[in-house]
Each structure stands twice: as structure tokens, then as C-alpha cells.
Image 1 (cartoon, rainbow, N blue to C red):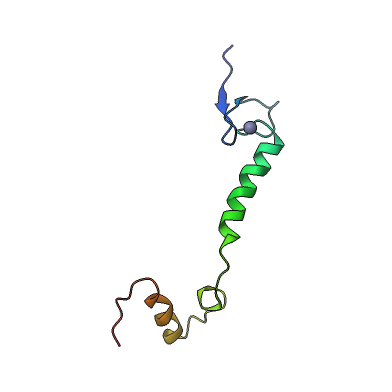
Image 2: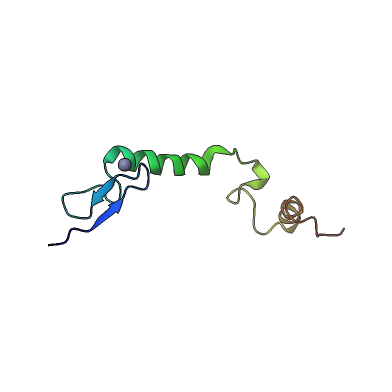
Length: 78
Ligand SMILES: [Zn+2]
């Protein structure tokens, strides 16, 4: 019987892909939490300015959206 194994995305440890590995593809809960935590932290590390917050920017306000776009493209002419 061949056992399927995967490499833990965090530490690279060989993890058997079976029901006995609840944290697969991670080797352990620790690696899983660290990896997901790092990803989550990356997404929230940069504080969003009020203008950059899509939830705060009213969609019906083209001027606000335009100034937002200027930061990224500079293609808008006034
Ligand atoms: Zn690991």
C-alpha cells in the first residue's frame, strides 16, 4: 500500500496524506496556524487610509473614486 505524502508548506516536513493527519498539508497545528497567521498578518500589516478603504468609499461618489485612482495610475486628466 502506497502512502501519499506531501511536504508541509511551512517547514517542509513530510506529511502523510491520511485521516491521521488532521492538519494536512501541514505537519502540525502549529505549522498550520503559523502559516495562516503569517498570511493573515500580511494582509493587514499595511494600515489602510480612509480613502483606500473600499468599504468607506461610497460607490456613488465618482470624485472620491477618481482621486483614489490617481494614486495608482495618474492617467486621469483634469
Ligand atoms: Zn510543518
